[in-house]
Length: 85
Image (cartoon, rainbow, N blue to C red; front, top):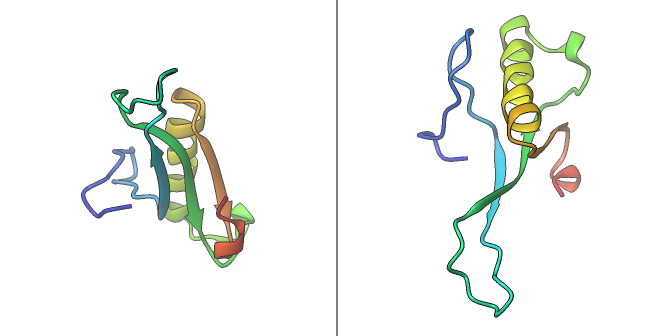
C-alpha cells in the first residue's frame, strides 16, 4: 500500500503491506462504480501473534478490526507472496 494510506490506531498509524482495489462493473460491463477494497494482506516472517513485537502485533490487530471487523474486507497475515491471494 502507498505510504500515505494509513489507518489511525491507539498505538500509532498502521499501514498494511498489500491491498487489492477493484472496480466492479455494473450489469452492462461499465466501470462507473466506485472502487472497492477487495483484500488486505500483511506480510511477516511469522504469523503467530506471540512471535511479533508488541506494538507490531497490536497495530495488526487494530488493522484487522478496522478492515475485517468494520468494513468486511478479507484480511490476513501471510509469510510469502504465494499466500497473497
